[in-house]
Amino acid sequence: MTNARVLQIGIDPEVVDFSPWPGQDADKLRARIGAAKAELSRAGLDVTVCLLPDDADIAESVVTELFANRAYDVVEIGSGLRTSHEYTLIFERIVNTVAALQPGLPFAFNDSPETTLDAVHRGLTR
Image 1 (cartoon, rainbow, N blue to C red):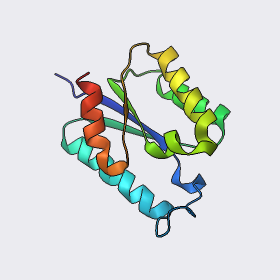
Image 2 (cartoon, one colour):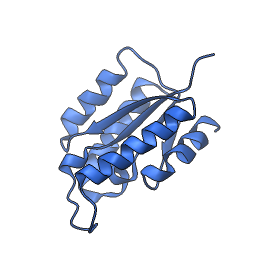
Image 3 (tube, rainbow, N blue to C red):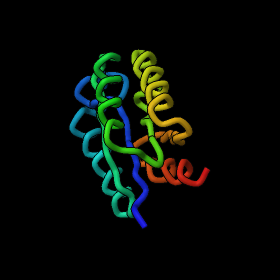
Image 4 (cartoon, helix red, strand yellow):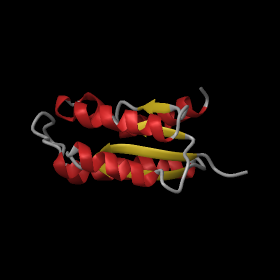
């Protein structure tokens, strides 16, 4: 039996404006994302992390490329991409792209990198 394949999509920490979150920065967020990936891997999941630029066309191309030779069992989309108004267009394009490339694929949504494993489990058991 193969491990469930998880595509973890988020906005690249390098493009995030951290001014609303004092004490947070790109390095800290990258570490938290890395810890989430490690937790998923320890749980026996095959994880691909995709950190998107703040350009909708490029983001769509990046995601399309990931599906060119691979299918996934769940796509988890990070809260930073979903909840930040400046990324609404990117979020919308990514959801529609994934839905077109692999119809019926479940989506999972975390509240933070620390809740990623729970979100992925929900997506896999739907």
